[in-house]
Amino acid sequence: MNEGPAFGHGPGAPGQPGRPAMPPAEKIRCVLLLMAGIVVFLFLDRYQGPYAEAVRGQGGNVAVSFSLYFLLLIPLWRTRSPRFMSAIAAFAAVQLFEATNGFGVMGNVYDPLDYLANALGIGAALGIDALMDLPDRSPGVR
Image 1 (cartoon, rainbow, N blue to C red):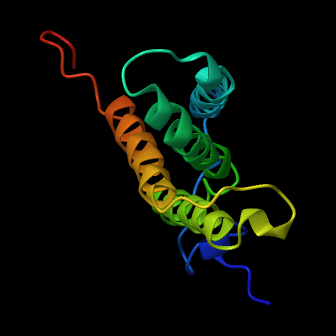
Image 2 (image 1 turned 180 degrees about the vertical axis):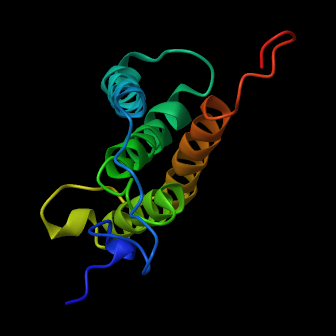
């Protein structure tokens, strides 16, 4: 099996080095955002505010898909498009989880809104990731 740069191993195309390893600060950021999603997931049952039923029902999907994006970003960092690959892999995993009713091994209550909630979680992860990756454009900073 050819394990070229699309799989994150070895050098890139001839004459081009492979993508560098994930910087430690980036890895820490991924782990912290992953943990933030887990904390939200763990405390959803305590939410008593507006739309409590919807928040508790779909909030878990948003939180899990958000966390899964950052979890997958770490091993996929050396691919050509790590953010795109992480988003696609996370999207496929959470949507398959819904379609197979928990992969047949976990309990899952079917709700068509869960598909949308999964997409929202990955969209939120991509948005936060992009915002945190913007260069500092503060006045006086070069």
